[in-house]
Every structure is written in structure tokens, then in C-alpha cells.
Length: 315
Ligand SMILES: [Mn+2]
Image (cartoon, rainbow, N blue to C red; front, side):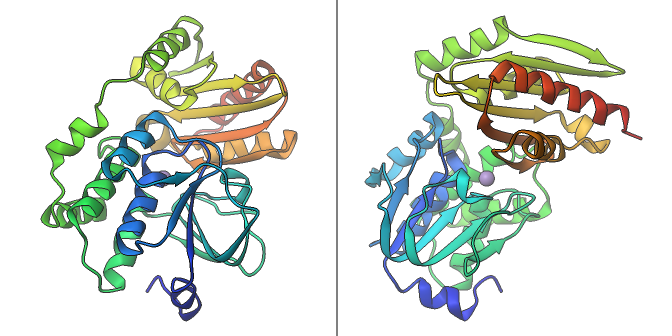
């Protein structure tokens, strides 16, 4: 059972569904799916929605609040967010509930109710189970957004497990159409994104450590898509950074399935960057992110060195 009495009670209150910064498909879809059940809920993003997240938002055209209120007279549900920095500022509320599937959950204050299922390949799968547990019907829209999230978070099912396929099949029975989802997710990319991906490739540097290739690059935005593309190009580890004039920087990292299956873990690498430089880190062994302060290029270099060290420690 995922729901305890305290969470069940808090779901009867006014709900604010909070997605993480630069919200991805999993986060936005989880919010929209919950809104198909709790139609009075408010969806809120505190730091923008990614292009692919916006494609999902267009399925229902639900209003999305772009700035969280300082206080919320009810329950805040933080989605796909392993720490409060990832979706903050989190409004003061009667109750905060976190629903997440990242490896490690940290930093949530005492009294927060946490539904943490790190073995699930997406937050959407947890939402699916929650709705089932409540004995409620899954509508076609709900099934469509949840299956879109599963597609995305599993890298088109490359990281899927047996349970992922079971849930996907149930979502199809509830009306999700796999081909329709592919066409939603494959909508044409904005020009700014295409040119940024090309710049990421142009500015890429790479080195070989044993049989593994580490690639780094620097972009103005779209770090995570850029990192994924460097893996497609042949890197085993991709580190893509962006920084702004305020001195804030963001790292997105990806690792190939092959190196992850040999024990390489990006979460551990970025946790150690966090221990050294402050900020926040989180993710999965093969896909993780870091937010902090400092020079984007310098932090990239440090991260690269840490990747080299952990590659040398692989069995
Ligand atoms: Mn996710």
C-alpha cells in the first residue's frame, strides 16, 4: 500500500501539484494525471517547463501556475522531485507530500509525507498505482499522459523492467494509443533547441579512459537533451553544463547502459560534486543532474576528473 491514513486525509484538502524546475514529461504528466482525478487541483511550476513537458501540457490545456504562492492553504504534492531545491520554493502548507522515484530522497523537512519508489522507472508508474489503489477509473487522457511519461523516462523502454511493461499494457487497455504518443513526443523541435544541440556537438570535447569515452560540452540551455545526444554519438559518459551571469550553473549528465551495467553511477559522482561545491544533486545511475554556483567549465572539469576516478575503480 502506498497511501497511509495521513496522506489519504491530506488528499481531501485543496491540492497544489508542484512540478520540478524545467519540468520534464514525467513531472508534468504526473500532475496532469492527478488532475484528471482531482479536478479542482492546481498545477504549479516554479521554474519553467521543458519543451517536451509543454507538449504534454497541450494535451489538456490545463492552466499551469508559473509562480508558486508563498503559502498554500491545503496540501502541496511535489512530483518527481528528490529534494526541495529541485522544485522550490515550496509553499508553506498544511501538509507536503512527495511522490518520487529517484535513487535518493534528501532535504525534505520533518512532517513531509514521502512516497518513494526508487525501483519504479518513472513517477508516472507510482501515480498509476496510486489511482488504482484509490479504486478510481483511469481516463484515456490520464492513460495517454502517463504512458508518455513512461516512454520518456525509460528512454523509449530501454531502461524498462517487467513491471514497466505491465503498467504500459494496462494503460493501453485504458485507452492510451502507443502510436499517438510517439507522434506527441516527436513533435517538431523548436529551432532554438535544434541549434543548441548542434552547438553542443560543435563545442564537444572528448577523451578516452580505458575502453570508455567521456564527452563534455557547454550550452546555453537544453543541457539534458544535449547530454543524451552525446551518448547517441558514441560517448559512454556525457557531461553538459550551462551557466548564467548570476554565477549559477547546471550540469546534466548521462551514461551509456553498458558502463552503468558495469557499476558506474552518476548519482555518486554528482553527490561528491555537491559535497565539495554545495548546491543540489540527484538522479539515477545513468542520468543525473547537479545545480550549484560557480564556473560551469571548471565544475565540468572537476566532474570529468571524478568520472575518470570512478571509471578506474570499476571492477
Ligand atoms: Mn522521473
